[in-house]
Length: 188
Image 1 (cartoon, rainbow, N blue to C red):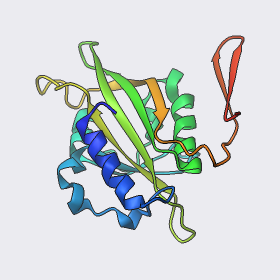
Image 2 (image 1 turned 180 degrees about the vertical axis):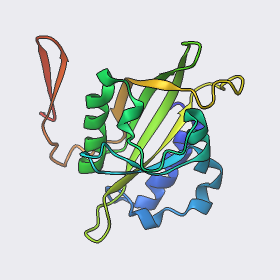
Image 3 (image 1 turned 60 degrees about the vertical axis):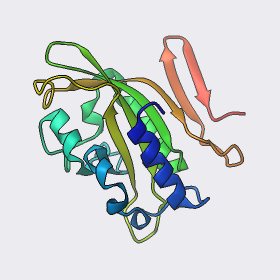
Image 4 (image 1 turned 135 degrees about the horizontal axis):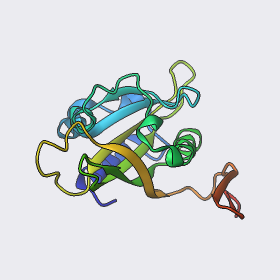
């Protein structure tokens, strides 16, 4: 992870899971990470609704110029990247795999803004909806207020799972990278 906020939030999440695959949502106390709340969000793990926001921090909403509650997370991404981000979110939710994603977005003057997206699962409980949390932060300071409220066309540049548990079985995922090349993730 490159961003200090991502490292700090991951360390807090890791401490709260206490060796389990993921902590329960109630285990995370907002007052413990108060200074990070502007960059933190919670998504509902509803693939049909394209992972709507339950909560989004003020800095994240400022980057996009609107309140994100109830809106689709995957709609932030350009069409070419939506299936990939859906697959990544599915892995985070279904396999409780913490994942960091490199993201770029376009500013109004068509400049690429580099961001880091941290996705962290919550432990699934039968009496609560499945959700995941995360953090989105620019990798370099954004100059000027003209950028805020105008980032669009998010695209995935890289991603990796953090401390993957090799002893658990992985779901088999099919990734069509380019015409004629298919990768099956999950095989050993």
